Length: 180
Image (cartoon, rainbow, N blue to C red; front, top):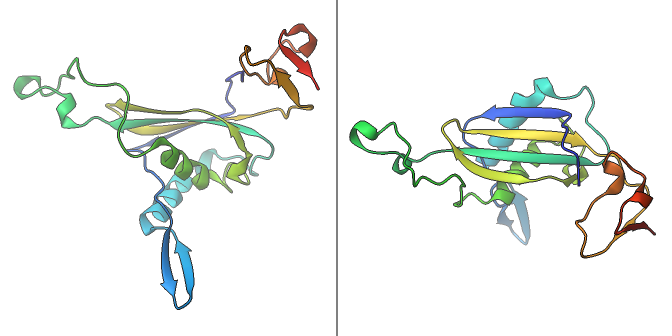
């Protein structure tokens, strides 16, 4: 289990944006892949917004990135008439419709490549949460991870943990985890 004390906490106001699928067009016998202009614009805007909070040099090594996405509520989550400002009791908390969470995460990770980290392949852990909120925004939490020195074996009955990420190491004191 990763202790969640973050090195960076970024807040980007506005509805979260998703990365679209790459497009292809044919040039004679060759195909060319390209991104939609709106995806490039969204990535650039996100990078510019968080640039002031970025480290002087992009981070190296493994990272944990949690992305919490808060979407604005549609009008049908609120009452009508004099209750137009009141949230219905039946209004959901979780955003279960499109865009998909992996496409939302992809845009964030790609936009912060070269700004907060060298390559988004460095991100080895993290959670993605999609919720509704009266204040639409994207919150990004970044934590540097200490690399695991040796590989570990985990019994299937135990919760997977990277032991040297937790305080209170040494590993020998933890049941179900042994060095290999």
